[in-house]
Amino acid sequence: MVEKSENLRVSVQSGLLWGVGSTLGRDVIQFAAMLIMVRLLNPEIYGQAALAQTIIGFLAIASFKSLAGYALQARDPRTFDWAALFSAAVFLNLAAFIITIGIAFCLGAIGGTTFEALRFVLLAMSPIFLLEIGSTYQTVWLQANHRWAEFRLLILSGSLLAAVGGLAIAWAGGGVLALAFASWALGIPLAVAFLVSRERPALCPVWPRNYRDGWMFGLNRGAAGGVASGVGLVEHSVLTGLFGFASLGAYTRAIGLAQLTSGRVGPLITQTLYPVLTRAEPGTDRFRRFSAILTQGIVWISLPAATFVALEAEAAVALLYGPGWASVAPILPLTCAFVALQGLTLTVNQVILANLRQGVSLRLDLLAAATKLMVVALALPLGLTVFLSALVLHGLAILVVTLVAGARTGAIDYQKTVRIFLPPVAAITCAAALVAMIPELVQGSSLFLTFVQLAVDGLVFATVYMVVIILLARNLLFELLDAIPLGRHLKRMVGIVLPQSLMPTTGNEDHE
Image (tube, rainbow, N blue to C red):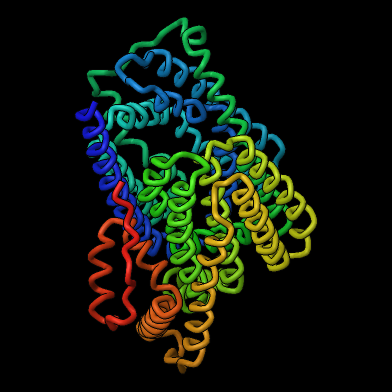
């Protein structure tokens, strides 16, 4: 038993190492590709791809992806019926592919420039369902067998292939085909690995009877995923109908830039600290302490990141996207606020889920989806700026409701949560005020001076933020550092510059 627990601990550590490393690697590859791609493609092309991807995502609710995770519920992958899983994948994804082709031709029959462009992109993206038969199967098989290195290397290979191939197509004048290829090329290495695998299963004609529990799991997950996908489809469709593909492209690129900064913090920190959270018994003080650490890590990083990008919206867009995307800058501050609030809400919701309150988590998802649909219907016709302002207010309200639900269900400690939010708010205020006093270095359209301005402002903002955090909440800071990888090294770095009188007097590390 001890040996089994030790093996699991080593597997978790290996999974975290490869997971965080590959995520950062993918971000670097995608970021580098994006810097070039946005200079080759215009906002209208991005808008066409965004709407098509939203339709594909909605159709994916009824595809293999919704029930593939059932394989990860098996405690022993050697006894799991992989043939039934593969057979379900073939049946569901062939159906999804045929439905996508049918929708594309129906759009073409309607006619008009908008529907014709959408038909073309859907046809170009439809092979993703065929590819995912092998790639999604291989994904869950590698994860179930804890083959972390092979899995993450295949993911990285797919990211590199998508970036290089997409850029080559865009450079050759392929337009939206570049984004279509990049959307499904991510799974090519995994699909190839499936085809050459010795463990590849055969089709099972009686799979529906053998996969009844998996089917119920897929229905549950599909219903949950359908809420978010449906809202996104309505949002993108209405936005395109009112303002056109170019506005949708600018909107999605603003969200992409916000997610690239503050939006990526949540998944990385959750991936690192979530295993610590699930070790604690639900509803206990220990669980609430771990959930506070998880929430604190995301709040203390995502909020200042979102604020800085919002402050430097024009410079960031000019440097990263170029002059062709100037329409992104005015909406970027509101987008950063919305994405940050959404990320915090998802984190607290996940804490509630880890506290074994699945019903509460689902009701919160339904509430957020239903009220967002109201925002889309009422605010979007008034303009993109009004819509984003309404989304920020909506996100703030849903975050408050989720925090209250977390406190009432015993998932989070209300007083500790308040203590978590106050220091970064004060630190952000001080840092933003000081950055606003820095004189403008940029004259004209010099990218070099734009970079220098961002670097200077970023250094000042980060320094002031950390100084205020250390002065106001050094105990909370050291609790967080105790919980994260390499935290002890960061503590020593802080100790070098911090007077001994300001160092915490007691340790907060949990050794269990």
